Structure formats: C-alpha cells, structure tokens
Length: 48
Image (cartoon, rainbow, N blue to C red; front, side, top):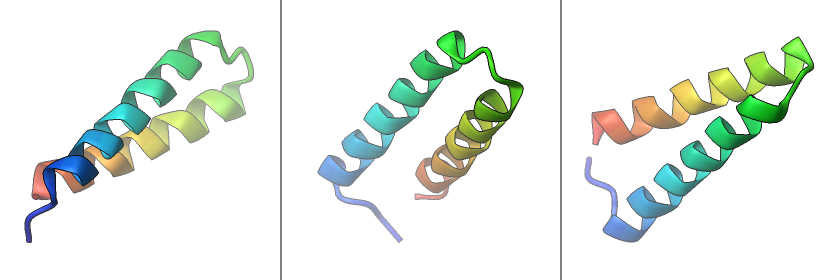
C-alpha cells in the first residue's frame, strides 16, 4: 500500500501541528491525546 505524495504531506503536516500543540497543552489529558494521535499518524506513514 502506497500513499499519494499529497496525502503523505498532509499527514506530516498534521503530525507537526499536533507536536506544536503538545508544547502548549498544560492539561495532561490533552497532551496524552495528542501524543497518541501523533503515534497513530506516524505509524501510518511508516507502513507506507
């Protein structure tokens, strides 16, 4: 399975945005939620 370059770019942009938000989220639950989302998205990119 291969992702289109545009889809990969969008996923990477989303990962980058979540990582930026993690720096500002003081709430542990928000941080953990973002961390799990980043890991899930990164897993998708790594598999393709």
